[in-house]
Amino acid sequence: MTKNLHTNIRISDRVVKILEVQILEGSLKPGEALPSERDLAIEIGVSRPTIREAIRSLVSRGMLATRHGGRTVVTDKLDSTFIDSWQEMLLNHPNIQNDLLEFRHILEGQAAFFAAQRATEIDLINLDAAHEKLVLAYDGGDLRKSIDADVAFHQAIAEASHNVLIGHLSSSLFKLINGHVTKNLEFLHTRPVQWKMLEKQHYAIWQAIREHQPESALKAASGHIEFVIENMKTNAQVNERLQSAIRRLA
Image (cartoon, rainbow, N blue to C red; front, side, top):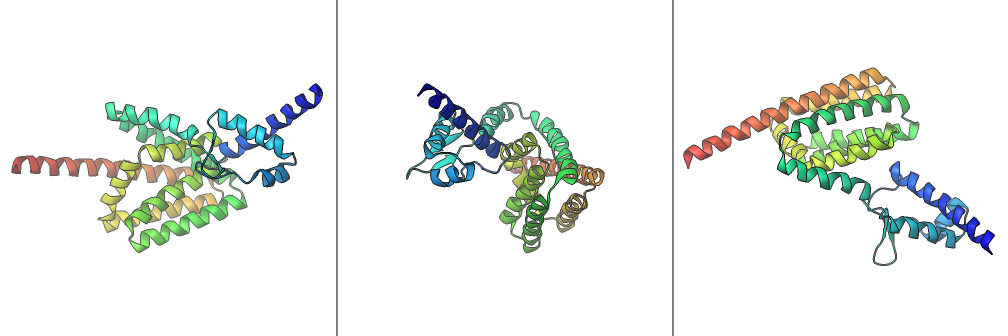
């Protein structure tokens, strides 16, 4: 009896590790429901009680949560811990914004470099789909769709890097600076020349990754982020001048 219990615990630990890997690599995303116990048991090749034991373990650690109707979903614990702390810091110390942009410059450049080295055919299919949506959104002029497609494109690159930290940090970073990304794209959306330049930059990154050229991908991604940072600074200056004019008028 004791031997069977220990064996069951070891098997459930193995299932925990399998599910952890899927969460870390983004195969299971925050808010996504797990397959049924039956399907998981068949997929992994274990009993349903073992699946239940593994799920209970991950629920107790906050990685999974049980929702109404008995669904088990992936939580955003990995992202929220990072985001909550840094959102408060950004609120209290706005000067950190520049450090955040520098970090984005490093992260996205390296993500593109690794993606060009490591992307599988499946990654490239996902990247193609993300780029196609981005082009359609930009050409269609729908700002909200353009913002969502822009973030999704960069996240597809991060996931194609096959580095779990880059994948999660990229997702967290975009959530953290969502307001700044939105304001910047709103600013560029009213400037057709810059808007077209963004499209060309995205195309250059996509092409370099597709052709497995890491150095070109790094250069294209770095140039893109430098362009974004410069325009964010210009946008901030324009807003400051506007506020100054409003104050004088008042």
